[in-house]
Image (cartoon, rainbow, N blue to C red):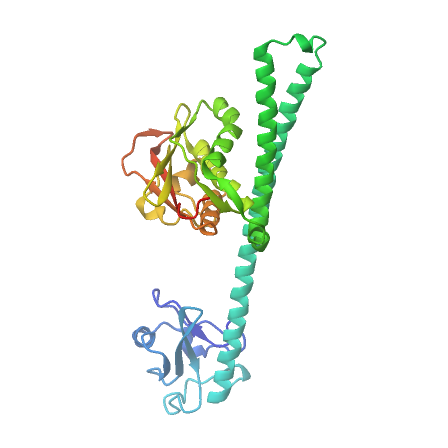
Length: 369
């Protein structure tokens, strides 16, 4: 929505485009070598200029893009003698005062700013819609797991000889009930993630309580055990930690999104390791798995919302919100989180190179209880 004649692209010897309110002069609708050379120089410096044929031009920056307004007559900034036989005498190509021209500029800038705000708002709306759809998809999937496990328990406890169940069957039922509880906890975590995006204040206004970070990872490991068994993968926890941090309930989200990602991206028969490493006044957790290779140029951006490595996008798609959440949760708990992807390719699968991927979370232990 540009009101005055303008040029923005000089790479293809572009002719001036009509503005919404003022047309270009007919003389300017022809490609001329003098004009091309003039515009390439005019773009370098803002302000008023007169083109080789006498028309007014004005170079400025709109929304971070250079633009040349041209094919106009602005009082004091055109050559009347040169324009004598080049003027179209109609209402759409009238002479402008400097004040009129600058008023047009102001209106144009405001209009463009509003347009950009609208584009930005539409982008954020789409991101939020995609996020809600992803959350709902996950919740439905978890709900199916709860339903399936509940039905299996019903089959066993409805047996007439329930009291004669063997120890292995009782252990099986115990595991199922634990999985149901764990899966329902994961549903709660998904809903927490929803709150985190749409009402972040609701997260940080909650009361902090002491939380054992090792216990958080161990709990999520048990939540994901069944899924790992189906995919022929294992989560191995190395080391231990008795450190407790003051945290918000949203801290439950951290180990889940990290391990959930690791399971999703690891090929079958490849384990995920979680290692707790004590340092002098801090502690770090290293989570390692084999996954689609992340290029060095991509690694710094994978904590941004909706950003994934190119090989991840090719093979899996998905939304790219897991590590974004992990980063946000770490930030509000005084924890650092860093990603590493080894340059060496371990193997290729379906033409996708795989390498070791590592997440390192570090936090001070000065504040433990």
